[in-house]
Image 1 (cartoon, rainbow, N blue to C red):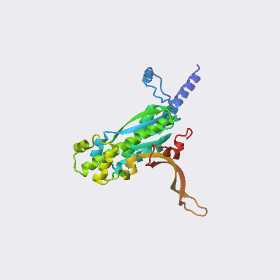
Image 2: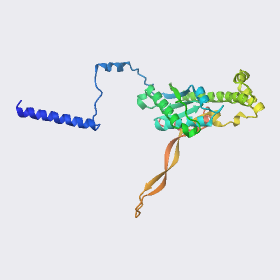
Image 3: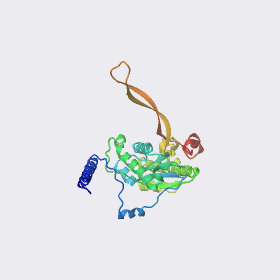
Image 4: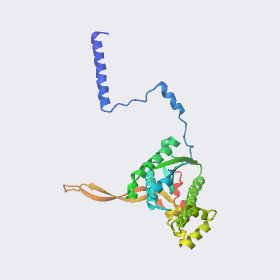
Length: 301
């Protein structure tokens, strides 16, 4: 190599070093994942891909929420603030995450149903569950003050989650029917139980003993004869839970526009149509709901 060639090479190397350093300082460097002898550890990651052509259901539950409700002064047997907060969090999950066809919630649980053909995160079960639970939990803390203005959040709430696959539309409908039936059974029991405790002065143990072995008709009779409560007149949200479905909603937004021959922009209201997760409190066990919202089960929805 001639001396002048060596000088040119040294100059080129120095220039390349300067460029790399400049790009690094500007945050412009894109480096592929380094190969190393340690990369074999990736082989230990399990394949958690959900089966194709199945409804993916992610159900979350509040962890130790009996204690959480006691320490934060939840009203018994139902607290509108807590239920509305759960609904708000579920709406946020549906707006932020893709491919959720419908959601159903009651008490401290919520189920999110992803479309059968969803390929979100390559259908990895862990991704479905962790994204839903983390988004819901962070929303619960974020929106807490909107519903519990006079009650500070004493400690962070926890939620656990699971993923279940249902291959047929009927399986999915039966799953949601099961959760709504559970809502009815639990709410009827709690309504009678807390009426006995709060209005008749029974201890929790005495109320539990009184209700042991009673059927739904007997519980309804106790409510009506002793407390003049017709269970069928209780709010639908308590008895049926909450269903979230996608609907087109008119949203009014403010927008600044430039009007000819005027120097300043003018603020006007503009109506936009937006798909929004809307809460419903209705029966989903019968066929009427599914006939009214056929798009939920549609393959191309």
